[in-house]
Length: 176
Image (cartoon, rainbow, N blue to C red):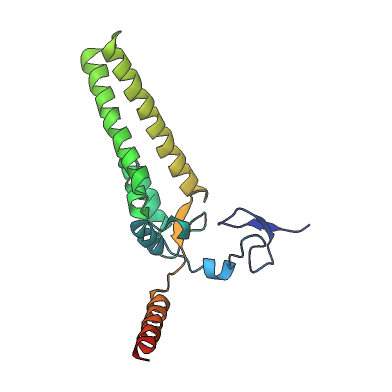
């Protein structure tokens, strides 16, 4: 029976002994050098096509630290901010804020019909969604199912050298 692995880029089923993905050509050995810091850089530069999501913990991330951040700061999205997933982290903060709004109105005012009842219902639904995400993240980190954003190292030097070569060629042509 052949063993297979899934490509993190295209999710193609590839035999385990293959060095590259049969569909997109991702080199699995180079993928092992992918880091979360490179993914954060790609997020900042707006290069989402460079980012892959992997269940393999990158070398620059401590799984225990991410788990503790999720466990104690998961309501605030602390583990998402650490990994560079800013929008998910903001969603967790908003969910946490709605949880406080929900708790305040539910305890102080009681559940009533009308506008306040609808507000409490909406806040409660957002709170439940935030709670479910928090619990599933903690469980997925424990059982190695959490997907970390990673990116392959980006070679800036090569691009700069190509630009310099092009500029020099342009200057030579202008001088003729």
